[in-house]
Length: 415
Ligand SMILES: C=C(OP(=O)(O)O)C(=O)O
Ligand SMILES: [Mg+2]
Image 1 (tube, rainbow, N blue to C red):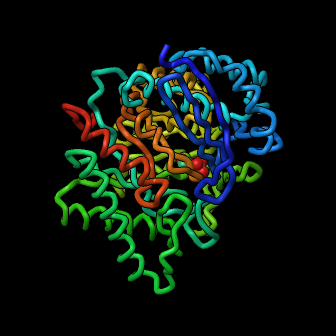
Image 2 (tube, helix red, strand yellow):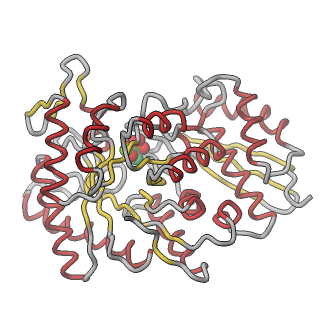
């Protein structure tokens, strides 16, 4: 049996914020898989718990042996069984005993070890022989909110989608062209602009939300004219971060404006129309299915309204969202749910219900490239990975390699 697990090793490594995270190696008779877990800053409250109370050190000192003694002898390709064993070892509802980051790194390392044992790339081991669609990269251009400092916009991520790109390589370089253009524009606009970047490599501008939206639109247009590629703007508002539950208002401190739910619906609708936004993530607090539903019913035919903190990659929450018609896209972050099996179940449910899965990095990342393979294997039309920075380009460059390997690659359908 080529894929029988012979050893499991867990180590503490650095993530891009300089925090500790776990990296797992799984060694099979005939292969090897390595995966590391990322971590969020603007996390949803219903995500599984990343690590046990003692953090990564406790995983190394107590959990590693528990996991390896159960997994050694199992076949690495039996991913569902492996994920079930991890759930049993943990024994809690939210993975707080071993940590969702531990379990997801084991789950992904097992899949990679199985793929190598059978001599296949991960995307075809998970997605089958017929995968051919490449995701559009959602590039992160400017950062605010929890990913930036105090004078930045409240909106967390100013994104772009190069919807006119003919292939991934063109798409990735189009995003970088917008990123470079923005540096020029921001330097002209703000004499104090230092070129500082946020957690995901987007610029941190010292400007208001409206100014940032204007400059993002300008950068998209100018880059489109220069490259001849249509590029549309998008946002991750990460609104849970500035929702004040006592006041029941969204507090935009940079603009000195507060909006109730109804005003937020109108504001975001207006942004979508004014800036021709292609994508808006988390325009409402993570508990506000009703706000999501109202916005989606008004503009869901022209814009992807995406739930991240709302769904936390959880199929039960997605089912609620589908029943309530709350969104037409969902962020897929495997470490929010703690296993590949559950990640896949959520993707499958989304696709069956015309909810677009968008595979995503976290703000704290490593150079692990697994999500590039997951996006292709799952047929996700978009992937959110940033635009520059070592841990971001690890995924983007892997997408370029995958595209070069496929015999008949084409871009996914966005509409
Ligand atoms: C990537 C994101 O940030 P974090 O990883 O901090 O949740 C996000 O909110 O989509
Ligand atoms: Mg988000």
